[in-house]
Image (cartoon, rainbow over all chains, first blue to last red):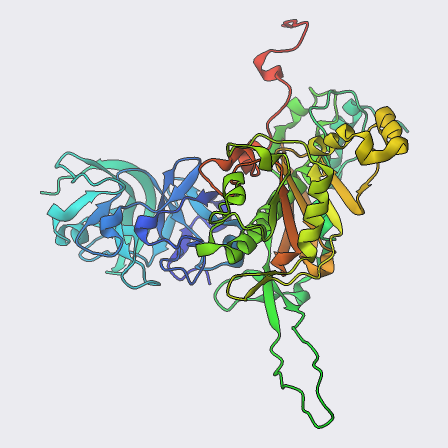
Length: 202
Length: 383
């Protein structure tokens, strides 16, 4: 049921802006050839993961082949992402093959139980980064991560999602918002406030 | 009483104010139409059935619905001697699920003041067109399912599941070229290059595609790929492909039909015993693609959950409205549709097939007229 990973706090879902985008397959992420909307796919799309825009008005998972199965490479999003808000294997989504994405407005708050918020605190920014799919062991999706968790993940291994160049100290990364309330290492309330941030990883 | 379009537009506002959200109705044709709009060909191939919540099943994991349909079990008989016993068969019925999803019109908005600037009944036109726009999307989804069914059958009967069905693979007997649910037109087979130039449909093409549904096809290992015993019932094609019937010769028609055709064109809705459904939606069913279907009971199901819904509201001076329907379509027997391709290229190759697969959803509303570019003649600027 909805709410496993995402709950909208304010305003309610009916007030949010949403779009249904066709999905562009990203085989480097372990997408099944046929259909990642299939709940039995190797790396099924799940509620709360973040997708990037791709060609032809489609969305796709960010990241490259190096992060599909190994945790040695932490892709961080450097382009805008959208939250996918459909439970794994919904029948309507399976057949339309469209990802239901929340696009705004700026300032909505949501409880997020998908991501790594270790060491985070209220006011911290979150970033979109590799995260192991809880529905598919060893397969990676992209989800919000606090900078404190990102730093512990070895800054030298952080690379740009969708490209293989390592981030430099002045690289701009994309942040979907900031922590309103830090509940635990696996749960925060986030204020959607998307913007580019210049991060110093060193 | 005759209604003028201005009355419709102002009455539309007034009724919204006095009666709340409701529909208004009246019409006159004092505007230029951009294109023809048709009803759904899907509903002609698979008659639509209305279902309600009680007919459907839900999931334990999420809040969406399916209808589960039984499929006829296989059976056979056997000859035995007086003391013999027949072979036992434990019955295990197969089922498939038809999932439901929404097709919606756009959400139309206008302010009251600007609505009064229209002399055509724009609200009514959009309301009527919305239904046809929605069934266009339904037809597009249906054709995607049909093409997937045809390709799946091709994959079943070709090495490594190859669906590379093109003139070169057919003529040279290469991987992917085995005809299981597809055939190439006779003129397409004469081409030396694989491309998407559409050639005219010939009478023997229709004979061949009819036979394909009836035939049994067994692979080299003795495995039955297509069991046959299906009867073609109707053929779906574009109006422009059907126009090639008018080019058939005296040898094809005989003198009576030839003289009729010379006068009126081919006006019958049957050809070689097949009921023909012609569609003008060339952006959905692309030219060169002809499908032949069995009767619906052998093929699949087409459902609408409850009814088509229409919502309209007015907040201050802003008016907005939207229509939608919840539908489910499923093909239970993928062998019940076959395809005739009138071009030599491979329609399953996503890198080159853009001319022969349905256009993208967002490209379907493209207009014929060029008024927004200032192209009307004679052009007069009014200030």
